[in-house]
Image (cartoon, rainbow, N blue to C red; front, side):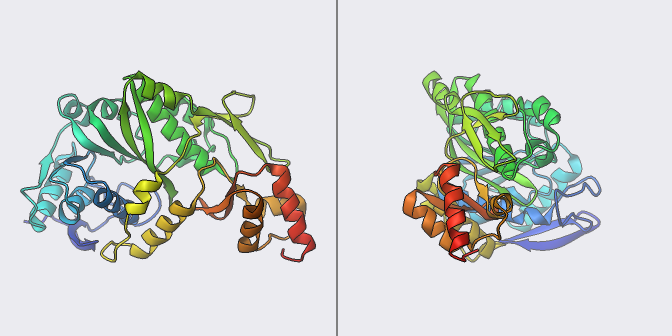
Length: 369
């Protein structure tokens, strides 16, 4: 029997009954007791892509809501043992309905528990945290409960603190100071990664970034755990700070905490190229076109931290923004450069600011701006 006031939607290959007052944009509003945000379909698509490329035996959707993510895993991937948990009884009823609707009762199990109590007695190969708000309260329990070489998948929708709008709130939650800058969302993403890695280090565990990105109103990370104190030390050695110069538009990063810098945060790679090479944005995904676009950007994105915004640099120099493709070609003649998924007007490069500004001035003289 369907929960009262519900409507059926199709996401990927999965049929879902959701509240007829569901949220459809931005971070979402909790309308009623059971939460479902249709704009997070892309986030769930990526989790399906990830699990198809990197299969696991057991996976937990820790705050499942209507069960959209967990049921999609059971329908659209080869995960043998899916657990969908939500402490709200009404949400658990929605999940059971959606499990039955798709005929995956044998592979998707529904629980109605406090998450931290559950994680104190059960372990999983993959734990997915996608809370309404910040994930910080659940990260220590997840770090302890994920299995050896297991995967933590974490969404944070509190991007205002992470990206520098509320730096003191970021420091309270994540133990790191955020700062406003053109690359604020990358800063926030790296603060989240750094926070998880510091929590893992307390358990003598390290982590490797498999996939990390910003989209819409959230940041999202996939980390694979690595065991031992030496793995934890390697991760901690790649923490640092970034300092933004609003006058020149430049930035510098490193291990030192200077006045006005943001951090501590992760300065290592955001993606694993081997994983990205095996991920496929197939046509059966809910937002296949967008998945293909992002997958292409992730694959081509160089692994240097932070980026320059084309409009911002051009404004600093008092010139019109040059065309992106000729600019990238010229930057790649001297160093490495790429577009980035963080912004359509942004460029990642390993060149120093002086060289970047010189190439901009050259583009202006050539009439490419």
